[in-house]
Length: 203
Ligand code: ZN
Image (cartoon, rainbow, N blue to C red):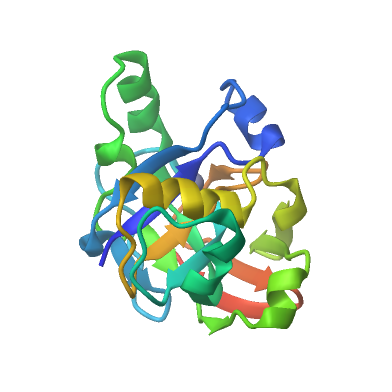
């Protein structure tokens, strides 16, 4: 299983980190060891002093696909949830300055915390997906699939030009604005279209 992530897929988030708005999807991969079900314990990593939350819509791939056409792209996904693309922002900033790869900041153990999956049925595929992240009872991120620079169909098609998708693969579709630091004890709750999909505290 692999986890494919999309960077800078919402204009307001690209600008908050002073990045350019991309002309094609920015992709990176997290290994299987980055996966963590939110029911398990998420521990604040020892190597960072600036851990950020990035709450994102996560798609689960249900069949093998390569060079997928946009019109058929959503046939390759049958479940959806919210997840956190945890990022060691201090390390990422140094790596970006040196033009080095991001993996130490983005792909470390348990950096992909995943909520409960719900069926991604035909009805849901037609709808705009609004989601929020609450940190300690305050909404810190507000996202809406209609604001994605590259909508889900386009993302899946573009990803599959480079990486064969296999059943069980996960796609993080990018974070909206409002990313910010977490500390031990913070409680994070993700809600998609009124449904709570994860609720956990940082240990
Ligand atoms: Zn992200």
